[in-house]
Amino acid sequence: METRAPFVVVGVFVLAAIAAVFGFVYWLHNTGGLGPRASYQIQFEGPVPGLLVGAAVLFNGIRVGEVTELGLASDDPRGVKAVVSVASSTPVRTDTKVGLEFQGLTGVPVVALEGGTMVANAGKVPTLIAEPGAGQGMTQAARDALRRVDSVLAENSEPLKETIANFKVFSEGLARNTAKLDGIVAGLERMTGATAPPPKITYDLPALQSQGPAAKIIHGRLAIPTPTAVAMLETQRFLFSPAQEYPSFTQAMWADAIPRLVQARLIDSFENYDILHAPLRETEIGQSDFQLLIDVRYFRVAVVARPAAEIGLSARIVDKSGNVVAARLFEESETFDQIQPPEAAAAFCEAFGRIAKDMIAWTVQALP
Image (cartoon, rainbow, N blue to C red):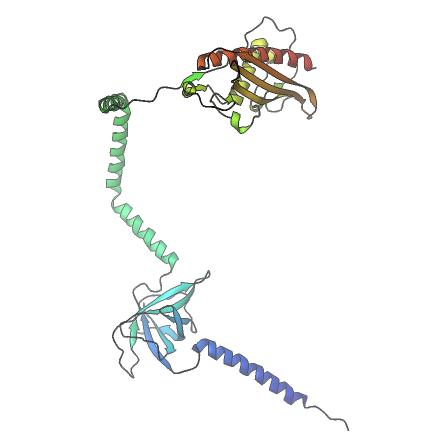
């Protein structure tokens, strides 16, 4: 005998069970749990943007209930009335502060209750008055603050203009009397015994001078980009090997960082050789036919038995396709007697002059 299952009864029972579970969870979530409840009326003197029935009610940051009713105040067009249901154990007093808080990234509004000392009348639903501006969000607060700032600036525009004009007159007066102020400061330094630091002494490299008409001109556009170098060489200071500090070189410096100084004086030397066809910086001519790529390997004072100025430059000539036409290493050394800035700078000038002469001759012969 075949038994027929009551499918309709089973389906109805399953749906009823699911609905009961969802209803219980919803009730538990919105009422804050089991136990007796107390209702309180709240009067907001202003808009409450985003507040909805079912919104959480917090007391000192702890959720104690939810908003059960929400509507407009019939006797006040600016007011909003709300009814909240909270756990009866919540210590709500007639002077409890009421406000709105905006939680999370989306700014969900909740009713926030805080503090209070006076005991509420038993059996009576008190009306709690929210603080002025309780429903004001951060955006509105910023707008109001900017509006107040704008009004203050508008009311004080003339005094502000006068203040700016006075600052301008004051700065112009300082500019006219700069020399006098410098004299006053110098007098104060002399009176207090303070001494100004000694001035910096700048040294330069000479460009190779013209040797007469060019034996061979440079065909095509030749560029000399800024030489590459390790970070230690990106300086205007005199460098020593082995590394050591010399007090006499404290105020001595090159006219520019070593790679840029080498670039500038090499270009000057090429111009003195043949100014009509001399190379330029890459930024000055755009696309070039050839590039003279230079890497500064060392530019130092070698302190051995006798100090010497040592310069090492590697050079490559590259065409517009990136092919290396020629390459060479240029090294020169010039000794001097005393480790002093003038003697060291003179030795560097001699060594650099020989390198510039050899590099020009080599470049002219290597180019087609």
